[in-house]
Length: 166
Ligand SMILES: CC(C)(COP(=O)(O)OP(=O)(O)OC[C@H]1O[C@@H](n2cnc3c(N)ncnc32)[C@H](O)[C@@H]1OP(=O)(O)O)[C@@H](O)C(=O)NCCC(=O)NCCS
Image (spheres, rainbow, N blue to C red):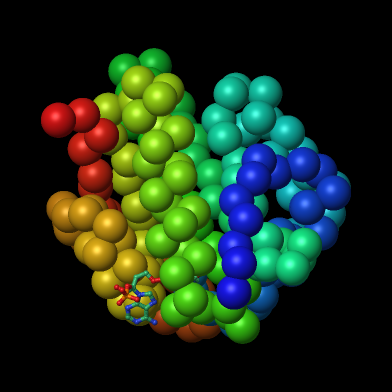
């Protein structure tokens, strides 16, 4: 299976939205209740690109099957060398190495942008993502207990961190 990574363009947004909305509707991976619409997702991405943050997609046979991006961890200026990232792969393409490729590319881009550290905020029920990040060198640094509430239960957020400089 040949996987191509490339920068996002707005025609990718519908395929990405399908992946995001699947995760909103069926999982605790995203702390939202309602599916997003295309306009909302286009404007979320436009805002990130306007701030020079990268958005990348993974394609198999010209079909977008995954994406990744990073942007501010928090908005205050002193956080400017810290970013929070997201990597999502369509569920039919999990465990084929696509997430690992996307995350490696985000790490490369973040180093080029002279950033200091990347943070993953992961729901504690999502142990796949915890393993995935450990496998790419991220270290677990803490848990924010009961930071979310979805599907009639409290959710805990695990924070994982990677330093980008030697
Ligand atoms: C987490 C996610 C991006 C991983 O993508 P993927 O393409 O399936 O992962 P890869 O095939 O590249 O796997 C890389 C490593 O991650 C770990 N991993 C991935 N899926 C795993 C699973 N289901 N169980 C345990 N470990 C897993 C493994 O260590 C794996 O390395 P290995 O294959 O050498 O053992 C994908 O499962 C996903 O999109 N999940 C839903 C969204 C999400 O949780 N995103 C992360 C929030 S930032």
